[in-house]
Amino acid sequence: MHTLYSLCYWLGNTPLGSAIHNSTWMFPVIETVHLFGVVVLVGSASVLDLRLMGVAFKDYTVSRLAARFLPWIWAGFAVQVITGGLLFASEATKMYGSGVFRVKMLMIAAAGINALVFHFLAYRSVGTWERDPVAPLSVRLAGVISVLLWFGIVGAGRWIAYS
Image (cartoon, rainbow, N blue to C red; front, side, top):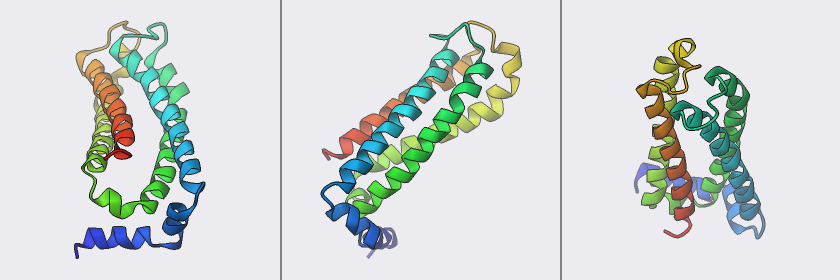
């Protein structure tokens, strides 16, 4: 048996994984909190991304929006990690075989890489361009990639239920 599958099988059969899977109400409650986390994370990230793309919020500096929305982004992400881990534990072997789940995880990794690249490259010079109504191409591209990835992640998350 494949080691990763064995780990998924073990996780799904832990008392926590089994409790969530066998409960009438635990999975729906956790999934609802997961969806609230999606709203907070993707909504807040979208505000910042729309500013980076020069589409909206042009009257606000990027630094000001980042200071206001990054705590919400991180809070939403924390909710996603916790609730996503719980949901995964309840269906680990099903997720092991799900191509859609794998695509979702790859998009999450890509979103993280996009954020890191933006933060360590483009954001270092934010003081030189943040007041411009149209940011440099690399900044706009980071915003577009972020929006596409997060909306793709949400779509894949919904698609998992039907795959």
